[in-house]
Amino acid sequence: MIVGIVCVDENWGIGKKNDLLFHLKKDMEFTIKGVVMNKNTKEPLLVDGKKVEQIITLTPDSACGATEMIYSLNTKDLSGADLVVFEELYYGDELILSHSDFDNASQTVSVAPPPP
Image (tube, rainbow, N blue to C red):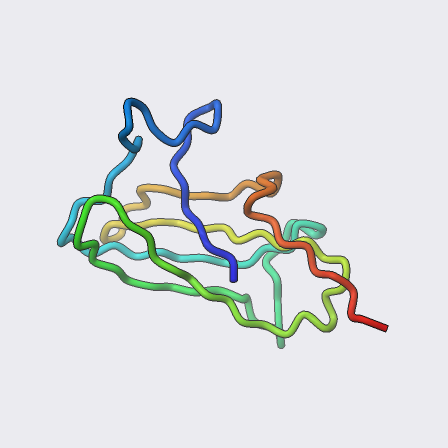
């Protein structure tokens, strides 16, 4: 499972004075779009010719919280690949947050080779 959209400052700080930098308004509908990217090729990961992606809609019941985006895929043919999930958060049609950093180690999953 690969999870996360995080709003950070230039020093990777996530808050100030015990508060977060960004809050979603409760009771408003948001859409999160995520796609698994192949860090080695810098292209979306394709399985059976299709992008590995998720789109979920959420309506927060508080200003702070979390949600999961679960990507299930067969990694048999991906030995040695590094995968990164890019996410975008929308309110209606407006993009309000995005994560698209190939170099973010905490968002990278390395696929181990299968056991002998």
